[in-house]
Image 1 (cartoon, rainbow, N blue to C red):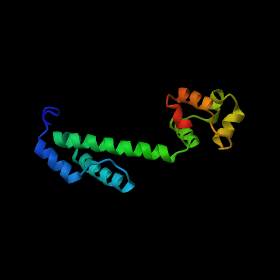
Image 2 (image 1 turned 135 degrees about the vertical axis):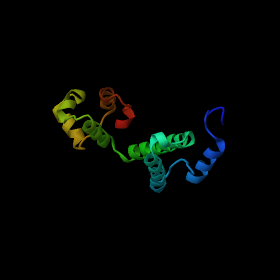
Image 3 (image 1 turned 90 degrees about the vertical axis):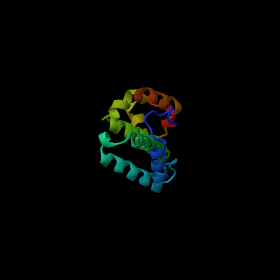
Image 4 (image 1 turned 180 degrees about the horizontal axis):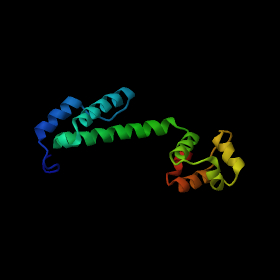
Length: 136
């Protein structure tokens, strides 16, 4: 392990791993526990973390991000994702008229009266620079 991670003391890192037990997060409770561990390290301060703690911190952040990414995407509908992307970029429905081809179609989709077609999903993907699968 030391060859792959220079500066890491295997025994210290093993003790940290045994204490925190990082693993793939599958439940909200596991996520909360991992967030508490991360907060503990944040409170310690970036400059005060050992190499072993920094490595553990990066691992736990990755596990949290993976869980939250899948958790959020699975819970969100294509329209909810569209609305979130619009909000994040400060866009109004009129900003999507050209993407959808009309004011009416834009309104129908945003109000949930019409699904996003595959062709419109591709257009939205290009517009927002994301995967079209988010909108299907």
